[in-house]
Image (tube, rainbow, N blue to C red; front, top):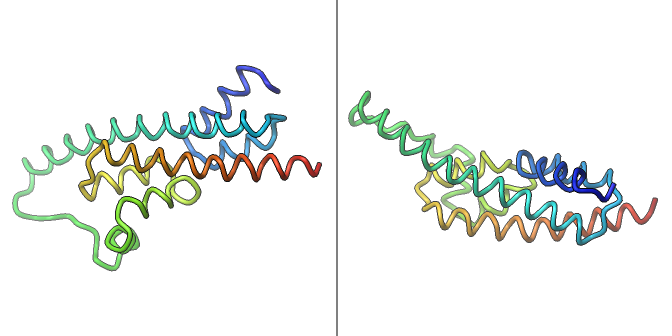
Length: 147
């Protein structure tokens, strides 16, 4: 299945939900390099789009919220897992958790919601995507060689 359609399918799925793209990559006969590129490019494109659109949505939401409600903060409770991870590990912790556990929209929303600049979110998330793509491409290629 080493065709343009296969590359676009795996990359597109990685852009939407990374782990679904990784699972679909296992169903192909892609080499390590092909898997890595599909995972990394697809996941990174999705991350950049979510960050750019998320930033626009956050600014719209803050403007809308400030017009309706004054002097009331709607922050999550301090014992919420997002707050705990952010306070302990910051943007790097969220970036590391995003590809395998969270999804790109969730990780991006958390990062932007805590006030991280979009450029730093993109750099951190794409760096994490690079490392996880290497790990999953290697693991997937190794597993598929057994069969």
